[in-house]
Image (tube, rainbow, N blue to C red):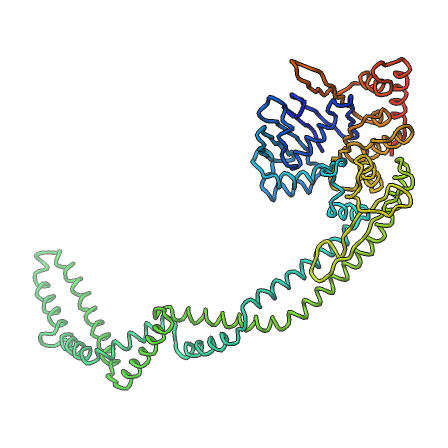
Length: 559
């Protein structure tokens, strides 16, 4: 809902700030006073192309600022979060128009593009009036309104889900097809993997092989070294164990004279034990040493094969196992992809069938809603002073060859304002006043079910008067019970129906015409309605008629 609109140096407005509440707010004023500037300001805040002619004469730039409450605008909140413009439940749109033709825009204080400003504003406010502002001229908006009127949420959700499933399968098939014919790659990987899998490639196995090869290569030297060491550890003659025992005996005789020699003896005893253990282990190692030329040749051959594989696949020896596993995974993936591709066509056809079934249910519901909306709007068009006018909702089928979350048809609102004339697309209706009234009829017939909370009507009462004006006013007030409605009007019968009333006036100051906007109290409203009824000279009869209009509006039953 629009809460505040600030305008500075815009057209003939020097500076003004307006506050808005729920219900119907009307704007009136003398001809040429600038009543429609509020609509124009909202239009530029909705992303209209910059117009330097709207900058007040003598000013460098015009500044426009609007604040919206988002309590009832979940779509706008979601958009702000997605675009990272979110700032709690409030939303501020700001735009400047420079006299040299440039412009800048901000959303919640952050710089924004005009396309971003327009996308957000489309979720916040609908302007019904001039063609370039008209929300319902968009076929996307027409379809959304029809679905809201028909309450097609469940059918739309089913179509959207089916479309996403179908799209996902199509993307998967495209991705697999983009890989081309993988049979050659599968054959190549199978051959390469076979070579690798014939060898033990784990790092531990390779380490063990290298160690065994080294033992065989230095076998004679190892045997000689072990034999020499065993001879020194044999325990007889000049062997190390005997020498240690002799040393202990010598020191034992002196221990009585130096007690600390006992600690030395303990260490030598430990050394003797370790020498015995070393001799046992060395004997075992010597027994394991077997110089086998055939085994040496086998180790040589295997190491040669591993080095050849390392060079062929361009990876170090200790990474061959990981390379083998990666190749096996790729082969499995390709084989699975090939099988997946074979079965995808059937799944895609099933998904397409499911989408068409869901789209058909939605289309049937739309057909019923289109008929009901057409009849209700046609009746309202007649009430609004366009007797003989007719409104239709045409449903045009799409090809249905691609998944579409919006269903299998598009909407075109058709209208004729005169009997005997064929209905034409709403966007081709020439009269701004007729377009506004037709938009009002559509919105009232649709019970204001648009997701957009704020609706602005300009020229809605153009070319009408008398009883029809009263009807237009009551319809606007009825719509205001469900949505926030702003209406620029020159008819007292319409203005009397407002829950709030702004008056735009103009005056000359320092040789320049300036407009001022003022919120009217009850007395001010009565006086303004009297002026609208009686012209410049306000009579007692005009004031009485104005009072009666206000009383009738207050006493009218709520919609």
